[in-house]
Amino acid sequence: MTPILEEHAAEVAGAAERIRGHVRRTPALTTDLDPNLRLKPECFQVTGSFKPRGAFNAILSLLERGERPRGVIAVSSGNHAQAVALAAAGVGLPALILIPEDANPAKVAATRALGAEVIQEGITFANREQRLREVMAERGYTLVHPFDDWDVIHGQGTAARELLEDEPDLQVVAAPVGGGGLLAGSSISAKHHRPSIKVIGVEPAAADDAYRTWKSGHIEKLPTSPTTLADGVRTTAIGARNFEVMFQHRLVDAIVTVTEEEIAQAVRLAWTRLHIALEPTGALPLAAFAAGKLPPGRTGLVLSGGNANLQTVATILASQ
Amino acid sequence: MTPILEEHAAEVAGAAERIRGHVRRTPALTTDLDPNLRLKPECFQVTGSFKPRGAFNAILSLLERGERPRGVIAVSSGNHAQAVALAAAGVGLPALILIPEDANPAKVAATRALGAEVIQEGITFANREQRLREVMAERGYTLVHPFDDWDVIHGQGTAARELLEDEPDLQVVAAPVGGGGLLAGSSISAKHHRPSIKVIGVEPAAADDAYRTWKSGHIEKLPTSPTTLADGVRTTAIGARNFEVMFQHRLVDAIVTVTEEEIAQAVRLAWTRLHIALEPTGALPLAAFAAGKLPPGRTGLVLSGGNANLQTVATILASQ
Image (cartoon, rainbow over all chains, first blue to last red; front, side, top):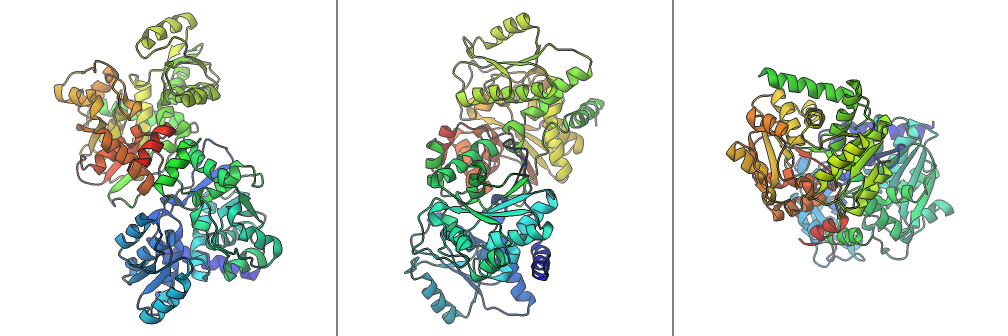
């Protein structure tokens, strides 16, 4: 085991200690689908996704280091927004979230309900990074990046760490990959647990930048944000830190892609056989498993969240 | 505590021991909805409902008593069918299930997939009891009753028993009531745990025989099987043994009823906030909780199952 892996795994252990009491320990579930399968349903996490693990670790680490942020800021139309809002409120810091104008109103309302200030006016997917820099300069708030941040990566690694504490014999661990926070964190926990474990990232074929990055050995960027049911992984490229962990240190063994139809089938399978209400992004590892795209063996799937658009899900469920 | 309650609770403890290894210990979940709420999601039980607890206890108890059944038989269009099929297969006994002709084909297929023989031809809701007696006489198989059976009641009581082991401070426990197997078993476990705990049964207003039975003090029977989203509780009357436990021994404190709209809202709430895919029957206690119909205090909801008709659920989810 390399010293770098040891260091990262120690940081994940530290994160687990730091965020205890702020997040839930989600259960490891067995299913009727396959005796080799174990699920880590992060849809049961606070706010309905794994994201508070990273957000709490980032914000609590800021305070531990003695930084005195005036507030925290994030750009997100999805689960990261609610996670940062919750974590900031938990430590009494103001949170400002930039959410593109065309985002799901339910997610905007949920973010506001957690006490965050939300700015939507004039924010588009294209200009949001620029607007972020401007607002950060105006307010002096500290950024909580959704994935390309060591504290966030180490926080996200606590989910797979718990899964392997509960199910130490797993031979394969699969997680969705968007920006790479969850997958990088998971790979640290899994490879530290046992170097021979296979760590697989799953992404939509329509958003295959991580797959192409794995193949080419350098960060590949999609020209535009892709259209996919799995709206949690519409980032155009993985982060530099995520690349370093996953591919330079080779902690991730493979990236597999799934079709939109395989994602829809997995959402239906989750409802009918697992009885878990997953968002399409959260169903990505299940899609790969059901399509026979994961290596054989005792397999743990990190199901990242459950905050689906209800109309989308109703359509998926009705179209068998 | 009465000797009768002690005896029943000892039988539930025996059932828990007997069925261990055949059923799952489902987790107790916390939620973002209310810090006082705990869930026992029996949709994650084998076959997707609590029913195998009773079915395994009944069939294993038969064998323990030295009875040598030629096979077991049940009448069910729902979760009891799959539970009996699974439990019979688990001990190597043939299972024959009578399922009305108009039943959901998916449930018929699931029952067959578990190795049971299914008879549907000529079976209606009206004539099924008559046909059951005939087929029992022909085959010499032993009946596994869905609720009016001590072994079944004691098996079903293991769910609330586990919940109270995990969450000993609960002040209220609520469960759906159809024939009364789950509620009677839950009431034994809850009142044995703490006599002051409130035990509440929840049923659709459209199928309020248990409510009227509680009010009148004798078993009230609906004239016909009611029409309700909660198709798992369409029985027209509770069983005699269930009546004895629930109302003669006063182990159940109240029955509350919920409207069809409250049931639909609870299914949507389960998806959007709890991320659990419940069948409408499984959502009954949540419907009562969300409608403010349960007593105050730390509350455990026994969510009975997740085997929903997907089209029905898609319609419910789409109609916000």
